[in-house]
Length: 235
Image 1 (cartoon, rainbow, N blue to C red):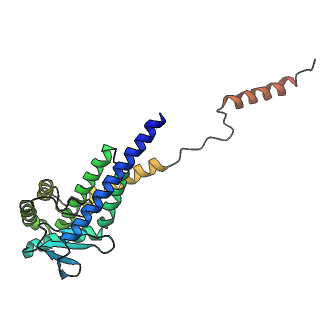
Image 2 (image 1 turned 30 degrees about the horizontal axis):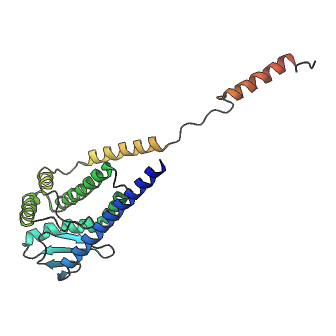
Image 3 (image 1 turned 45 degrees about the vertical axis):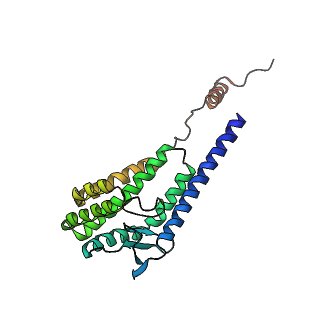
């Protein structure tokens, strides 16, 4: 049994080392690709070595865009990537990947990480539509479709950067997006608060003097007999 535990620990550590090594190598490759990027404005860079826009960096996140973007495409893409930065997604995603690395043997963690990444992108898409309006749906969808056609392979394979992913699902989400009504949002918040309070509240305390253990019940019964008949005679 001890040998099995040691072997399992070794396999777990090897898996962690492989995932960490993969993330570091892929991130270094990403840095090499953007090494020649030129500054456009603020923290926005342009590079002819990338085919899709993305955000990278931890302390000073930067946006890298491919050359030749049209003005309308630039508006959509910059707003999308800036939403990632405002929400600190560039910190949340690496932290989530670190948790995944520690629990790499759990398939539910892989599913959760992929769904989280997908939801991050869709949420930023919806933020763009809320700001630019439904009129931007068609142009935004065409921009995403153009990026999906241009890219020959995923951004860099790095789990620590944000690129254009799940294009088909995102386009469907954009075209079907409807701004949630205030009443629906308020109802969802109220229900969430009710469930949160219900799950975190402590159960009602037991009434004083209640007897719920056999030992205490026997003691109470013995004291009652002594009070009624007096102490037993010693023979």
